[in-house]
Image (cartoon, rainbow, N blue to C red; front, side):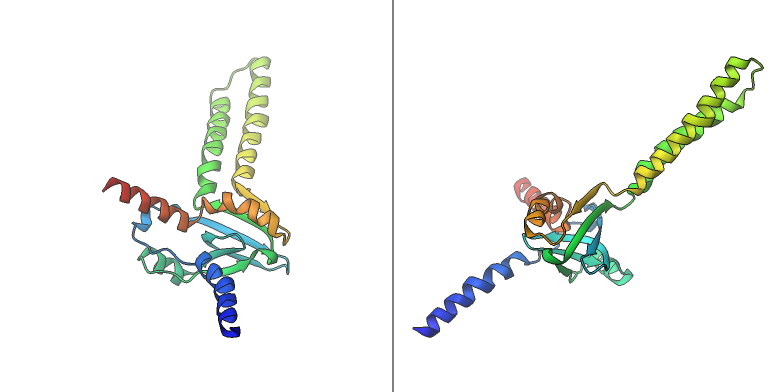
Length: 194
């Protein structure tokens, strides 16, 4: 009787934990997946970076941001993700690869165009000169600085502070950006098309 209760306890404790971290097989083209860089600040003060692989209710899985891991991921080899427990996380920041150029590029381009257009054709009147100073000297630089600042800030920032409750609340949103979620969605799409 004691052995049966120990087996039941083992199954109750360890099988759900294994099911949460089960890794999906990569059966879709990895080029079609959007890769999000995750920066994890730990309560110990350390920083970990990589590609967001999966989010469970108590852990965050990521692929280390090394050249070997990236090459293995691109070739379709099943990577071995690193795990961080929710109670060790201080803050999570998520950014899509190429986000800075996507956000800051158009703003800096428009600011440069404004600056060049205001100073290209000189006019002798005082009113036109004052307008050029305002647009070319104030508006264009503010637009450039603002778009660069927006590009530097990650679009998704979640403070966790070691709280399981905060992590569970953030997990639903973070999981949408994970590679595992994208693979599952792509697999469902291909299954319904056949």
